[in-house]
Image 1 (spheres, rainbow, N blue to C red):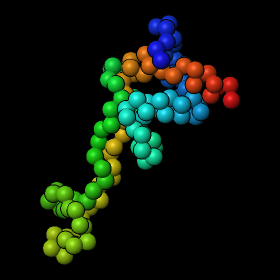
Image 2 (image 1 turned 90 degrees about the horizontal axis):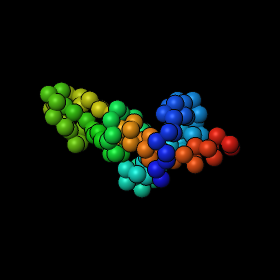
Image 3 (image 1 turned 45 degrees about the horizontal axis):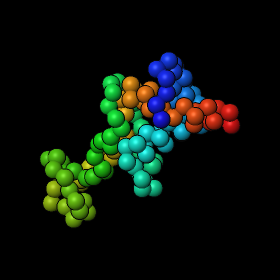
Image 4 (image 1 turned 180 degrees about the vertical axis):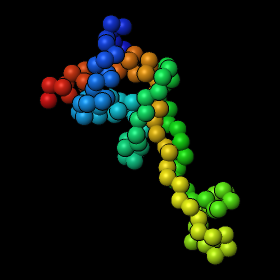
Amino acid sequence: MAHPAAFPIDIIEQALASEPRCAAAIRRAVRLSAGCVRDGDLRLPVSVVPGRAAPQVRGRAAHHVTPNGSICHHPNAYRRAFGRPQYVCSTIRVEVGLSWLITHCPVEEIVEARAA
């Protein structure tokens, strides 16, 4: 739901920074807007970037790489031939633009979370 343009940005930034219940409501709404419907997707971190970008899932899943940098699908099978494969953490996250967040912020959920 869109809100009036006079809605202060400070409320959103303060809610994301210091109010866990409000931040959880905002993150939940952003994840659902990005199309995250599975249980594991609802735990993805949300990063706010400058701009008007709608929520999108970005990044790569966790994987192993060989010392020369190629992806290794079965790390234990190649340990003797190529050396020990290195684990690379997942970088999957939901990115959303600050302007988009201000325009589509769930104001009612923030107010309810603050009251609780």
